[in-house]
Image 1: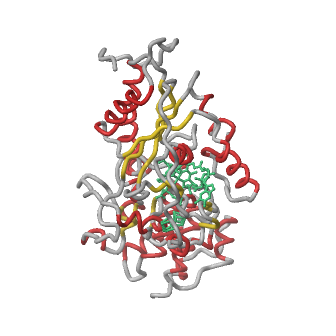
Image 2: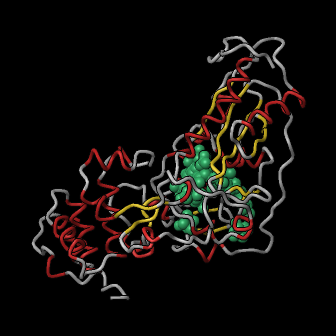
Image 3: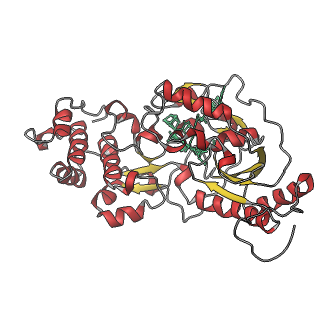
Length: 389
Ligand code: B12
Ligand code: SF4
Ligand code: SF4
C-alpha cells in the first residue's frame, strides 16, 4: 500500500503497477475491520444474473407493489460494470446493528403506553457509519492507483446478492443475509473497484429445517423462502405513500419505522452477541408529541428515515394508525389529538384519524358529511372497537 496522504478522486487511468491478489486483500480486509466493519468479502464485478431474474419474476408475480429502489432499473442495479469503468471486484462490507437484548427489556419510558417503536436498523445512523468505514478502504484503493466507488444505502446495486456471492453469509428464509455466528442484523454496502482481488466461496444454507420467521411475520409477508410480498411487508407499507392498506393497520401495532419481527425470532440471530446501544440512539418516539410537531421539527426528528418526497403526511398517517392501536379513549391528550386531525386540512390525515377514532370507540367525533372521498371510504368501512377496550 502506498502511504501518500490523500488521493480522493478516482484516477482517470488505473496505475499499471496497482496492487492486487491475496496479500493485498488481507491488508484491505484488516483496514476495513479497523475502520469499523464487522465483516468484508469480495465478489466478481459480473452481472448479478440471479438477482436480475428474481427481480423480473417478482415484478411479474406482482410482489413488488409500487417499490422503485433496485426494481426501477434492474439492468443497472444488477450490472456493476456500469458503475465503475474497468471494474473487476466488488468489496462488500457489513456493519452490525444488533443492539440491546433482542428480547427487549424496555425502560420505563419505552413501556409508557404512547410510544411508537423504531426498528433497530434505524436506531442510529448505521448507514452513515457504514459509508465512513467503506470510505477508509476505498480511499486506500484510490491511493494505490485503483478506481473505487462506495455504494451504501443506494439503489445502484443489489447488496444482498453481492454479499452472498462474496461468501459473507447465506440467504435466510426471511430474505436477510445471515453471517455465520453473527446473525442478520447488519447493514451492507459495496465498493466497486478495478482491483483484482480473490473471491471466497459462498456460505452453505444455515437455516436447515427452521421456519420460525414465517409464522412470526405479523402479516404473512414471507411467501416463499427468501421471497417477501411487498404488499404485506410492514416495513414497506410504512414507507409507501397513499392510504395505508386497511387490512394491515391493526397488525402494524406500535411500529413507526421498519419491522424487526422476522429477525428477532431467528435462532442464529438471537444466539449471536449483541452490543450495548449507546445512550445517544433513539429507539421510540412519543406519539402525541410527534403528532403535535410542525413540518420543520418533524422533518428534523426523522431526518435519517426514508420518507416519500420528505412529505410529513406519511409520518403523521403512520402515527395516527399507531394511536388507534395503542391509544386509550379516556386519555384527554388522545381525544384532543384525534379531534384536531379529524378537522385537519389534509383529507388523507382526516381519513386515518377517522379509522383511529372508530377503533377507540370515539365515533361520536366523526364528521359523516366530510366531502373527501377518502374519508367517505373510511366511514363506509369503520373498524370494530379494539378488542382490549
Ligand atoms: C427493496 C428493499 C426492501 C423492501 C423489499 C425487501 C425484499 N426482501 O424484497 C422492503 C422495504 C420491504 C425492505 C425491508 C427491509 N429491509 Co431492505 N432493502 C431493499 C433494497 C433497497 C433492495 C432489495 C432488492 O433489490 N431486492 C431484490 C430481490 C430480488 O432480492 P431478495 O429479496 O434479496 O431476493 C434474493 C433471495 O430470494 C435469493 N434467493 C434466490 N433463491 C433463493 C432460494 C432460497 C431458499 C433462499 C432463502 C433465497 C433465495 O436471491 C434473490 C436475489 O438476490 C436493499 C438495498 C440494496 N440496494 O440492495 C435493502 C436491504 C435488502 N434491506 C435491508 C434491511 C436491513 C431491511 C429490513 C430488515 C429493515 C427493517 N427492519 O424494516 C427489512 C427486512 C424485510 C425482509 N425480511 O426482507 C438490508 C438487508 C441486510 C441483510 N442483512 O440482509 C439491505 C441490504 C439494505 C442495506 N444496504 O443494508 N427492504
Ligand atoms: S419485516 Fe416484518 S412485515 Fe416484513 S417480512 Fe419481516 S416480519 Fe414480515
Ligand atoms: S428464523 Fe429460521 S428459517 Fe428464518 S431466517 Fe432464521 S434460521 Fe432461517
